[in-house]
Amino acid sequence: MNITYFLLVFIILIIVYFVNKRPSQKPSDIEVYNQALKAIIDNNHKKAFKILKDMIAKDSNNTEAYLLLGNLLRDRDIDKATKIHQTIIVRPKLSKELKVQIHQALGLDYLEIGNTIRAEDEFKKILNLDSKNKWSLGMLKNIATDNKSWNDALDYEKKLIKYYPEIKKRDESKLNYFVAMDYKDKDNEKNYLYYLKKSIKSDHVYSESYLELSSHHINNTELAMEYLIMFSKANPSASVTAFKRIENLLFDEKRFDDVESLYKKILDDEFNSYAFNRLVDIYLEKNEKEEAIELVEKFMPRFDYHSKSSNKSYVIRLNRMKIDSDSFETRKALSSFCNDIIENANIN
Image (tube, rainbow, N blue to C red; front, side):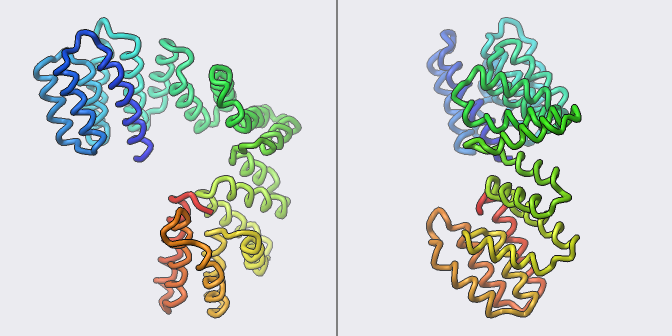
C-alpha cells in the first residue's frame, strides 16, 4: 500500500509539470487542477474527486483530469480505474509525455489486479516511446526478478547501468547476482558460484546473494548459518526469516543448546532485536527469569526511547513486559508483536 501511494505521488508530480507547461490551459484551470493535486497529497480524496469531476464536466477533453481520476480510483474501484485509463490512451493527438503517463497508470492498474503479463506489456510500450525510461526499466526488472526470468532481469539491469552510470556502484552487486542466477539456470555451477561470491564483495551487497549462498551450502550447516547471519545484517526486515531458518538447521541436527549459544554470541558482538527477543524467550522457557532480566537491563540504557533507535527500545520494553507476565499466551503475543516491529521497521 505504501509503495502504491509513493508511486501515485511520483506520477502526480510529473503530471503537475506537464499540466503547467501546456500553453492551451487557462491559468484558472491550472489553479483548479493544482488544488486537486494538493488535495491528493493532503490525503483529502473526497475534495480531489469533486474538483476532478467538476473539471471533467466542464471539459470532457481534459485528459489529465481523467488520468488523475483513474489513479485515485485504483484503490477503491480498480475496474473503473482501468476502464478510464484504457479509454484515454486511444485518444488522438496525445503528447509523448502524456502517453508515457497513461501507460504507467495502466501498468499499475494491471499490477493491482495481479495481471503481470499485461502490466509488463504496458511498461514495454513506454520503452517504445522512451527507450531509456528509468522507471519502466526498473519495473520490468522487478517483474523479471519476481518471475525468476534471470536473463531478462540481467538485460534490464545492464540497460539501467548503461543509461544511468550513477547507479552502477549501487547496483553492481545486483548485476552479478543476476549473472549468477542466469548461470544457475544453465547448470553452470562454477560460474554461478563465482558471480555470487563476486556479488558479496561489492560495497553495496545485494542481500539475496547471501540467501542464495546459504541455500547452496545447505548441507554445510556452519557455512549456511554464516551466510544467513550476513543476510540478516544486510536486510534487517528479513532477519526473522533468516534466524528461523538457522534454528531449523540446528534443530534438524538436534543441536538445541547451540541456538542459545548462537544468540548469546550475536549479542556479545552487537545488539540484534530478533536475537534479543528469542534469547529472552529461551530463558523464560527454561525458567531462567533472572538471566532474562539481566539481559534486558544490559541493553535498556543503550537505546533512547525518543531517538532514531526507538524501535529497538520498544522491543526491549516489550520484553520487559513479557518477563513480568506469567501468562504463556501473553508472552507469545508480545514475542510475535516484537517480530512484527522488526520486520516492518527494518531494524537489527
